[in-house]
Image (tube, rainbow, N blue to C red; front, side, top):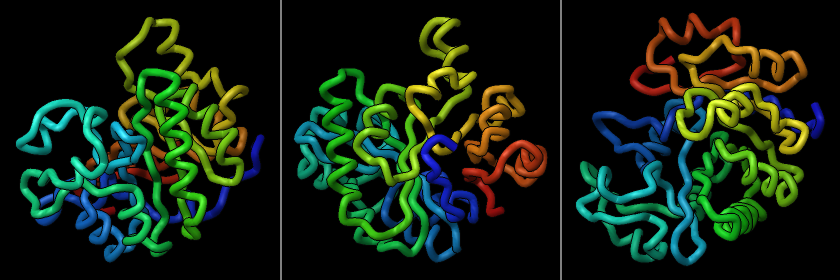
Length: 244
């Protein structure tokens, strides 16, 4: 390992994708987070940057799928988003502060930072994540698909486990996709772990990383059969649709 940050909690428990959601709880809500904690799982949630530099828990860059509102998440302030009810739930959008207050170290958190496009927004997201985690005493890791954002996070959070997500991406040129899939940015970004697309495994990129001491997680695993197939290639799974 380059940074030496490989805490044992990183791979100790299966990780509930967007919280433990389904019939009872909607994805990326505090209810889904609490359900995962009660079931003994680690938790993965997504973070989007708001118009005022806050961080809201949601996967999509727009409001259309999850609410009756429309438009981009990045065009709303955190307070505006907190007033929007999530479809199928009585909850509204929650902030990273809400998440950390609820979790309070009871279960490991894997925060997937959905990287903005512009460099200034990436810097703002890095600052927001750093502020939020500065006083949090629980286990928390940050991961992203974006090598540039990961490089910023590496400088800002030297003591936090940081991971790169890869595999399954379709945007960009063939050369850039190959570089991301093979994790060729590693000397610059120095990830502590790799989270790789389940259906793309096994793959040389994460296999090399694993041999070099970086744990490999698989996302998103949706059945016991898939978990069994992946067991030789990964150290833990990010799951949904079943309970490992």
